[in-house]
Length: 217
Ligand code: E4P
Image (cartoon, rainbow, N blue to C red; front, side):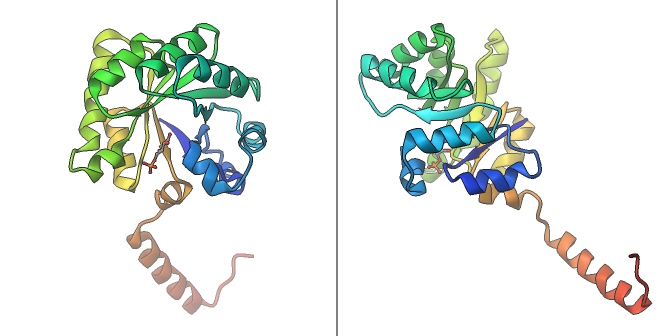
């Protein structure tokens, strides 16, 4: 399973990159706002840092304007994935941009049928939002499982990019279901390494080691 960092903060991506675990990055207008940076500038910096796909989102609502924005974003670097919303116009933009050889991430997916039509329209990635479904009492992980079944039934090549991940359990469940990619905030990715029993065990080992009076170095 690939790990994408869901952030536009370069320092956060660089920290995760030290472990070599960043397979890509996703951004959106809200994350650009949070970063306080210029979209073209920060996206270029991220693309220089990470070899894998870096999603940059269009902000237009008509297909023609999305296509124009998408073409401009795609010029930033070879690893740009143009992110378009799952609207009829977004799907038209997806079709055109993917036919031109660009990676396209279709975002704001909340149903299996939306995922199906995005795959038909040539999406490279589909982004179902788990957390935002959970927020309205619908199990977002069920959607990931449904899309996995549908894509496998017909050998669609569109990758399931599980988004709006809020917890470490979302990550392990996505791995169990078989999502191709998870995109998560760096804080969640860092928590994957934590377990209270690891902390307790280490503390006990350190206490016993101190009593031996020995040194390794
Ligand atoms: C990523 O592509 C999405 O934009 C992001 O995961 C949304 O997450 P949120 O629902 O926590 O804002």
